[in-house]
Structure formats: structure tokens, C-alpha cells
Amino acid sequence: MAKSSVNKPPGFELACVEDVYSVSSCVNDDFADYIDSWKHNGFWLFDSPEVIREVACEMSVSLDEAMLFYYEAYELEFDEKHMKWSAFGPETGFMTNIVAPLNKRLEGFDPVTFYARSSPECSPLSCCSLANDVPTNEHCLVRTFEEAKKALEEGKFSGAEPGPYRIFAVYTVEWPGSTGSVTR
Figure 1 (cartoon, one colour):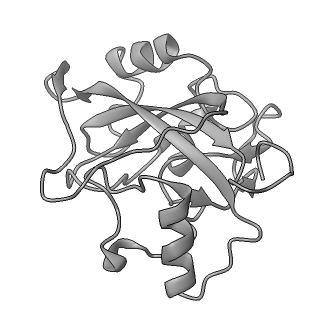
Figure 2 (cartoon, one colour; figure 1 turned 90 degrees about the horizontal axis):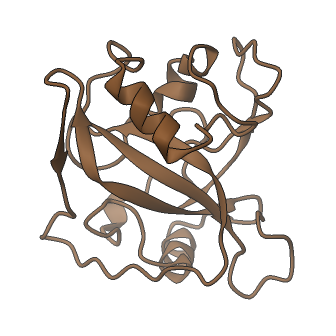
């Protein structure tokens, strides 16, 4: 996904949070409202940077300031009402052929809601300011998968937004063909 990173949102009192790399688009916007292009995959994200560029071109959207992110989701989702994990997968009505980047930098983990069972809805660490109660890194992400899983299981996300929750590893990657840094 191509997104804009934003500086620390108003209301964040945490000195360690510098910007937001959330999976959802509540705080840092996706590059465009891409759903109507119908070029996303069964996870409602994109298979490759080339598809993102194609959609941006069709929508006359500039990617000059956009960062490129790669996500890996834990194969289980957490139902906070029943306190249990269950399997999920891509929607079968969409082609899903993800091209993993050769170089990626792990930035942290984001527990994200999927109440409607399609695209990422809410990243409560930033959207609901749960980063004030759940320890995060400078990008408003949980540092380790184990910490994210434990926070969900201990109910630290209960009442923030309706789930289920999926834990995403958030990576920054270099745009193919660029000679810049990994994050832009």
C-alpha cells in the first residue's frame, strides 16, 4: 500500500511517537480511494507496487510523497468478545498473487479491526489513541508480535472498536526503480 505518514496526531502525549505508520487509513491516508478501481487483491490491498502505480495513474494521483508499505498478516484473527483466535484468508472472488519485496524493513506491528470483513478499518493505537495505554515505538506500532498478541488477549483493545482484530507486521520498502532510501 502507498500511504502518507503523518506527524504525531493531536492528543498524543507520548514523546516516543514521531509519526504514524498505521495499516488503516483513519490517521494516515491511503494514496487514493482505490476500492472502485477493483484492482485490489482478496485482502483488499495490492499485490505489487506496479498495480498501485497503475491505479494512481488511472486516478491521476501523484505518488511523489507517498511511502510504500508491505504488510504481512498473522494467519489468525482475534475475536475480542469470545476471546478466541480463528483462521481467515483472502476473499476468493479476487485474484491474490502477492509479490513480496526483496528488501523490506520491519517497523512494528499493528492490530487492525475487520468488522466488515473486507478492508482494514481501524488501527486503534492511532485512531483511538490506545498508544497512550499500549507501549509503541516511534511509528505508533507495537514493537513485537508477542506484545501485540498479548495486548489483544489481555483485553487492552476491548471497547476501542468492534473486531475481529488482525495483527499486521508493517514494513517499509523502497519504490522499485528508485535510488532513494528504503522508506521513500
